[in-house]
Amino acid sequence: MSGGIDRTPSPRADVCIVGAGPAGALVAAALSSAGYDVVVLDAGPRFDPEDRNDRMERYLRPGIDAPVWDTDPERDAYTSSGDRYYPLNAARVKGIGGSTLHWQGMVMRLHEQDFALASATGMADDWPLDYDDLRPYYAAAEEELSVSGASDNPFAPPREQPHPLPAFPPSYSDSLFAEACEAVGLTTHSVPNARNSEPADGASACVGYGTCKPVCPSGAKYDATRHVDAAEANGARVVDRAPVQRLEHDADGDRVTAAVYATPDDTEHRQAAREFVVAAGGVETPRLLLLSESEAYPNGLANSSGLVGRYFMDHLFAGMGGTLDEPTRQKHVGFNTTESHQFYNRPDDSRTAIKLEFLNYAGPAPADIALTADSFGDELLAEIRDGYGRHIAMGALVEQLPRKENRIRLDPSRTDDHENPVPDVVWSLDDTTRRTIERANEIQRAVLAELGVDIGWTVGPENTGPAYHHMGTTRMGTDPAESVVDPQLRTHDLANLTLAGSSVFVTGGAMNPTLTIAALSLKAADHVEERL
Image (cartoon, rainbow, N blue to C red; front, top):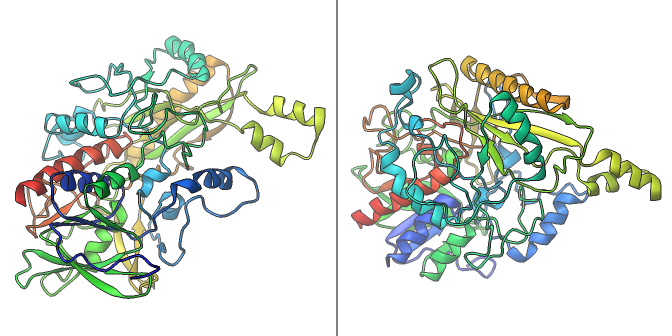
């Protein structure tokens, strides 16, 4: 017991899952609903949903420096030794629900070309499965996340049924973009969102707080606590503040036997199980495997290929914005409602994928202006009218190709709160990605010029930053020498160890990864159940 909460091991567990983010929560809900005894261990705390209004205020009110979702500098320590500094803690949450607590909530399927990039263009590698293999799991994932969408994307892969909930209507600024896009030959369409356009799953419809990233007070936006709650209702046990220190295996090195975890009172425990699923994200999953080195696995668990931590990928941001001499109302919606995938598929190996976004959150909100202004009364009102609602902007996610030198490794020179080496993010930007960012900027400039925008800022190759989509560090494949997990997401080296999440991606495309994480997690749960 620690803090009045029982964090001792369960005497019997069919499945032990490491991580209570979207991947771990979906696997836990699926396997517990099938009647299996499931234990979930997560490094972070359990956040009280009643605190979300306070967290929104923490985000909105000037002068409050505390992070919206509580962090721990020692627990979350890291280094970044690559060509480009990677700000890992800028957008990760350790706790029950994981990154879905503060994500924006956009959910798209990867395109068919994403699964066969090498065959189509000669770049990177093909996945060991194709779109059709994942298609039923995509449909199931959209149901699980209560996705709102119009199914109107002419560039999207084929689908079997409409989205579960109706789409959100285009924003006012989307209507301004529409005419300019038509003039330059750019086709637009709606954005699927994992937020309720109407009440569903016991949660209200979106009420328009506009603070989706980093916190949704209403609960209309999906987060993984929904599936954590479902798993617990099925009898699963979810243990917070229980960081797994290492995985232990049997004498032959064929099977994992226990997850060794710590509790707040600095006690170590061993949770045994028949099957183990590590779903700790693209950074902490490879880190845990590397920390679990043994005589049988001197370079880290499940690392006979030497590829654990290799091929780290993220999406890069390209953007442009400015002001118009008319109202744009760009702060009325806190998420995107219109996109264009027209330039997504790659014509050859000259560039990577581009997902164009029409942003609904450019410029300051009225409250931002009011709370930071020095004026009062009519003068303040005039300042708000001048400063608000005339900003407009476009963004884009740009694909980064997998490169072996981009990686997550251990840094023994710095340790966390349990004296473990912290993750070192080694990250750089390649020329193909640079060219793609430049191409995205060209398209954005054409649209904004047609619209008559006074362009005030540009995010291009030199000042680009990551989207914090950690992918590729335990890649999937059929050859044990060239991959870490097989198409069932089971490690090649250990028969009862599954890795769920974006770390298994072979390529990253330019789509927000959560729907693919969810689809792969449901697939992994099916395969784990087959073995139980």
